[in-house]
Structure formats: structure tokens, C-alpha cells
Length: 551
Image 1: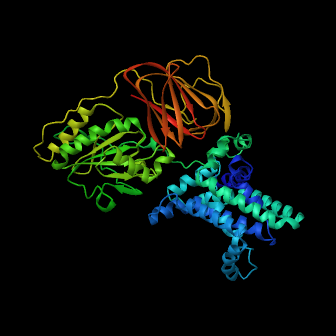
Image 2 (image 1 turned 30 degrees about the horizontal axis):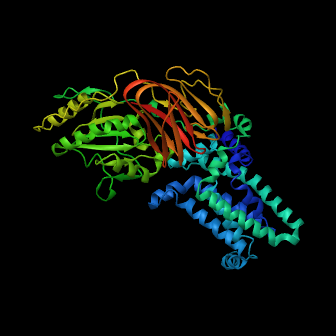
Image 3 (image 1 turned 90 degrees about the horizontal axis):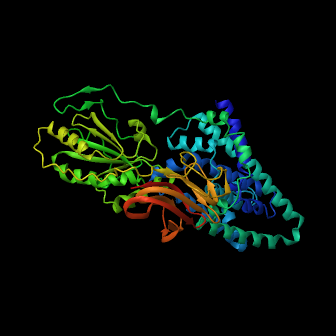
């Protein structure tokens, strides 16, 4: 499918360059041609294309390899924008910067100099609309798959974007030449625009701007990269649901099944709660009983299992029992290792945690669920698997059985009370289109659009109201954004991101205001007992909502 994928990627780049995603960089590209040097627009686009291409292919890998923060390149690029704004507002600063670059290039200062630096800064902060083409490149890069197809698609996409932006830059240069008498004023005006753009990036105002605008290129995307042929061309042919356990046998005396050798902890980005952050291996854990727990810190089902895991770890660790948490992110913000580190401290997780941002260990186990627990015996074989909450006594009995195989006398069983809800509470409800279910509102549209709330919402249904940008994983609030939900539960939780407020109304009565400060799970309601209720939420523009969970 390479023959189809690469031309479609070029077309996708062309479409991206006229979409709302380009607006944060468009004024900078348009004004970048201001000046005396005719090659400056080419230098800008060369810098943008080079740094954008390198960032989508290799930035994540390089930062991980060097142990640098994920947002380092973005912060550097914002710093460059401030510096380049200074070169326009204060010409002597520009002379100092361009002089060494002009010696390196043996061309007149400004051909490459500031223009190339400006392009590089833009290339590192330019975030395109995520269609199948760019999704294929980023997912392949996350798996370190830098094959010919990945590189070909990335180059074609970058060239498509660059062709349009070069035309914009050349247009800006022509305009400046027609009003040559005002070039100095234009330089100052552009310097102000550049500084303002840098400030907007610091406070993520570029993202908020995009949430207020409709996606006017949706029709073109649907008939190119997002068509059936396009999606097929960008499949990576790897599905975790295709994997099955090894052939089952029995191993006395526990009576537990034997699913064969356990997969290794594979290509993890970091380890928490280990000496010096050093990785663990199953070979080093041979002779111990190991529970591998797949979790993610915004999953309420995972969080409800943590007290049981901690109690088992505390009770049986001295008898050769080890828990290894494998944090495999469900949402984009859960990739941030600092967020995971903060969550493990907040929730009191003391056992080792592997950061599995690339799903390598998840795929090695063929896992499909959060939470999921795999019990591994002293010989390194998988003996039991449990998916979801509940049946904690059964899991503890399996732990004790495997420890007993090591001829250990064991302490008294914990047998904590099982607080898993046993009433018919409302199911987990995702808000992005990938897993949207029980939706009762007006038709879903791409990009920022207005939604109308229905008069009646049945049990376990939800609806959007006001302006929302509905994506695959999340929805982002615009003007007058509201959510309505008819639920049955004791507690209502919502995964939120961004900065702002959510006003919570229960049965038409205002009950609280939730201050959102980071991407995580927030508890909206705790009614004490499970009951039926009608929830109405009002959002600050720019907030993102991912999924409801209930307890």
C-alpha cells in the first residue's frame, strides 16, 4: 500500500496547510518574508520542513534516549521565537545572530540566518490536525519503526505542507516590496506579532483558538486520507486483540493453569520505585511470585484496585511476592512521566512501576484491559489472569497457592472487603467518537460545532450542548459548552484536561464548582448512596473531557 500511502500523505499535507491547524503559525510565515533578501522565504520553509520532519520522526526517541523532558523542544522553540522577535524589534540583535551564520553559509546574512532559525522554531511547535497519515507516522515512530514507508509518508506529508506555506511566505515578501517605504515599520509590526505568538504558545492560547473554529477542510479529509482506502493504507497491522494465551496445562499442587513462559518487560521508557530507576527483569525475579498489574492513573477501575494491591504487597513481600505495575496510557496526557510519577505518590503506590508508553509490554502480553493482572509463578510461567475489578479473594487465594508451591509458611490472609459496586450502575461512558455510546444528542460533526440538548435523556444516556470540538478521544469545550447525563451511581467521575472550571448541577440544582488544573480524573459527585440523577455540567472554553466513570 506504499503506492497509495505516499501520494495521499502529500495531499494530506496540502489540506493541513489550509486547515485551522495552520492559523497559529500563519501570521509568522506571512510576515517572515519581510526584509531585503529574496531567499528568506525559502530559508524559513526549509527550516520549518527540516525541524518538523525530524520532530515527528525522531524527537520522542531522542528525548527518551537522552532522558530529557517531553516538552523541551517546544520550550526551546518558544525561546527562539522570542529571540527572533528581538532581532526585528532591535536590529543590532539580528546582526549579532546572523553574522556567524552568514560566515558558515558563505552567503549574504539573512539568506539562511534568522530565516532558517525562524522556520526551525515553527517546525517544532507546529502541531498538525491528526489525520490517518500523521497518525501513522507518530505511532510508527513511537514503536521505533523507521522503515521506508514511515519515512516516505513523513517526507510526503511535510512537502505537502511546505508547498502551501512557501506560497504564503513568498506572498508576504511581495507585499512588503510593494510598500518598500514602510519596510522598517513592517519589521517592527512583525516583531510584535512574533512576540505575541510566542506568548500565546506559552499559555496554550493557540490550542484554544483552534477549538473556537470550525474544521472547514473536513470534507476534503474525508475524501482523501480519511477515506476507506486511506485508512487501509495507513494500517500498521498490529492489533492487541489478536493475541491469545499459550497452550494451557496444569502444574500441581495449586491446580492453577499454566499459560507458559511470561513475556518480558519490553522497551519501557522509565521505571519508578526501583533503586536508581533501574529496570527490573523477570530473570532477576525468578524464584519469586510476581503479579503484573496493567493500569493507568486516570482509570477509576484501576484506582479502586490499588488498596488491594498495596495490602497484598505489604503482607506477602517478605514471603517472596512482588508486584510490578505496568503503566500503559489510555489518553495522550498520560504519556507524561512526570504526571505518572506524581500520581504514584498521590495514590501511595510503593511497588515498582514500568512506564509502557509505546505499548510494548502491553502488546507482548496481548493485553486488552485496564486493569489487568497476570500472576507469574517462581518458574516464570503465567498461571492466572484477572481482568477488571472484583474477585479479590480469588486473586489472593491464587497468590497464596503459588507462594505455597515455594514451601513457604504464610501469614494470615488479608481478605479485605470487596467494595466493587454490585448494583447496576451506569457503564463507563467515553466522550470521543472512537468509543462514544448511549449518545442522545444532535448529530456529531467534525471540528468546532454547535450542539442542541434534547428535551429528554433516558437512563445512562448523555448529550452535548453548546459548542464542542469532538475528537476521537476527547471533546474540547467552546462557547456555552454543556454536558447532560442521566446516571445511576453513588459517585460520578470525569477525566478532564486543561485549565478552567466545571460547574456541576444535580437535578437542576448547583452543587459545586470543580477547578481543573491538570489532566487527570476528577470526582464530580459523591451522593453517599447509589441513586438516580440528572447531571448538567457547564465548562470553561478550552477544557477537554475524556470519559465518565462511576462508583
